[in-house]
Length: 371
Image 1 (cartoon, helix red, strand yellow):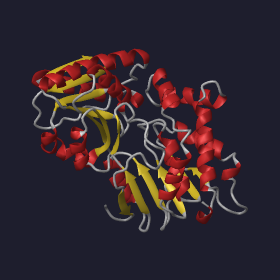
Image 2 (tube, helix red, strand yellow; image 1 turned 120 degrees about the horizontal axis):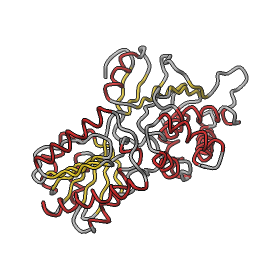
Image 3 (spheres, one colour; image 1 turned 90 degrees about the horizontal axis):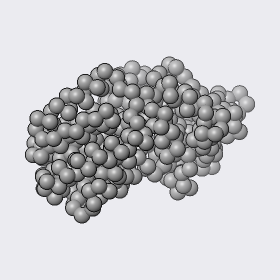
């Protein structure tokens, strides 16, 4: 990356090395991270351990890092505005930012800034982040945004939050907005339903389903009876998963939303509501109803020819597509959402470290006007 003019590759490597220390439960930084995340996230202790042990992306391949560096948009400065829904997301966001610009400012979420604050604190002690004589620090935490014309802002959060942010930016500041999204599982004909349900549960449990890669809907081919059998298998798989990794604390609004979701599908099809999760089943869907992001999944019977009518209104929101079995159902979904990350079911929460997890064309906006 010598043509870039700053040690971007070394800075990405330094951030990943710090993340490796965070992932180690025996080290001082790992212990500090776990104690702080227990207070900030609402996840259970096993949920935090799962996130740090299996989903903190600290060992990317050389090819992944090269892709991240090559695809990064260049700017003289970059500000990163972080969300709180995924406690490990700051690593990838900061890696993308230091690949973009020699000067990076980071505004963590007020609800959970743990990993961002640790990464910045530790990075500033390393040679890769030493400022040149008389230059401003290459990486710094901020509480307020003060971007200048020509600067790039990468912001993560809900669509409403990002729209407000765009309106607040001064003219000449470029916003790359990484907004709301969800994951979907496409279960074609062929595979064993119990194994498939276990794979889907492995994608639902991390972060208590709060991330944009987390599947919230499962389309099942092969008829109504097969889809209902899968819903029952998923209920068992989520129940088993919760014994190892309990769901974290829910706020009253989420509890109420889960109760409404369960009541709806108890009336139209089937619902399994447990202390750890909710599975709803719709045997004859006309529209999709997205469940709350709290280990809740809607299972629907669907065939490839019906996907457009059923899923079409949500296509722009799809971030991740997990698939198993006959690919025709997944192909029908992908035709409507070609930018969704496509992976084998069970691997939706482990995308390549090649840039932002959301591959949809990033919302672009210039400060001073709405996008």
